[in-house]
Amino acid sequence: MIVRDPVRPLRSTSVVLAIGANLGDRRATLEAAVDDLRRTPGTIVDAVSTLIESVAVTLDGADETAPRYLNGVVLARTVLDAKSLLAATQRIEDAHGRVRAERWGSRTLDIDIIAFGDTQSDDPHLTLPHPRAAERLFVLDPWLEVDPAAVLPGRGPVAELRRVLVGGAG
Image (cartoon, rainbow, N blue to C red):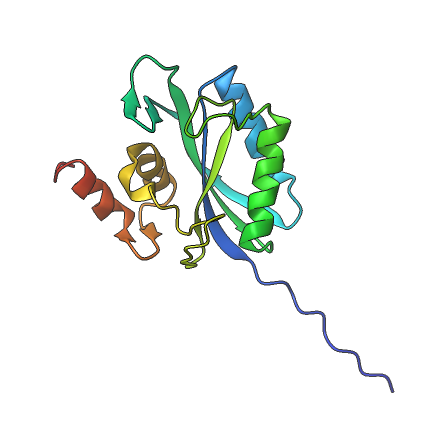
């Protein structure tokens, strides 16, 4: 009698992705990017927030003269490791005309890995969780929409981070 090891399912990791665009047909690009994420092997999209508009943030701060962003959050599960997921999101960005000429410059598509399970890492190529997520209402608000009990690893409940960011209000 031959005994075979049972096939073990791959473990998936819950991830939070922020999506944004301020050039071109922003809504169409973001919707196409979500479709691309759905087609990413080993990745399942569980929820997509409403898209919200926000002012462009540059190295010098908010820029009211730059084209405004549409932003949202995608909750997903993946069997990919964090660096493979980063490579997949960068391929999606590139497919939608992303040019990496200027840090924090205008872009046709931006996909940031906000959280990768409970992973905390200072890797210079992929810091986890995203180092500025707790400072960005355009990440926190859509995230709370799709997960009111969300927690940013190492930082705490997203609702509390939002409350502190807006100075104790709502």
